[in-house]
Image 1 (cartoon, rainbow, N blue to C red):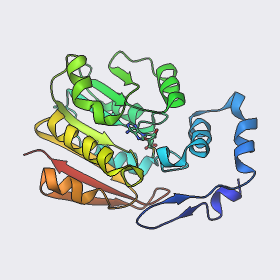
Image 2: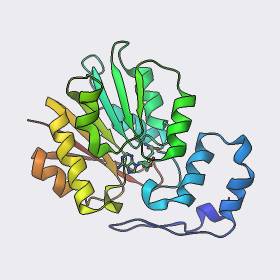
Image 3: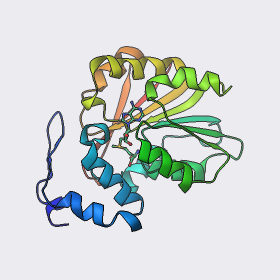
Length: 219
Ligand SMILES: C[S@@+](CC[C@H](N)C(=O)[O-])C[C@H]1O[C@@H](n2cnc3c(N)ncnc32)[C@H](O)[C@@H]1O
């Protein structure tokens, strides 16, 4: 794994992942016994722009993100880009027995992994884009969301996709509900400010890569 720690990433306004020869075959050989981290890394090499990161979020990032949630009040939570469920697992541990978590994932492998990894009736795994959040909540007969949590790589998305996710999330939240976004660049901030007004920013350095957390409240 030396290659993975030797300049795989370049930091900047946009993150570019570089192909490192030899690393993919290591993951392919280990495919049969793979755990969540390996499923994640293998998919990164297949589609780096879709994932935006080689490894799942750190414990520190998950904790800082979830500290913003009022678990007593949260009844409907949506999560975009759960990957292998690093954050979803923690949400399920903390959320009320009568709450619902709807996760939106576009990667086939991750959808399969999530449906086999978690056996919890409060979880709905949806194989659709985050941009469909309004339609999906309505199809599931759920009310507006109390919280939307997003780890999708906004800086790698087209302008229209980014706009669709932010606009539909704003519409899908109840008044007073929060949109919690973690990113490695601040590119999405202006889109968030346009719709949500004031955006509070936090940082978590103990993550590969260091992350920005944006907390937006629907007024
Ligand atoms: C950086 S990974 C985050 C994984 C996980 N949440 C974590 O923190 O470890 C980004 C995830 O977003 C997913 N994704 C990208 N675009 C998406 C979209 N439009 N809708 C839903 N998921 C998307 C990718 O497939 C990937 O699982």
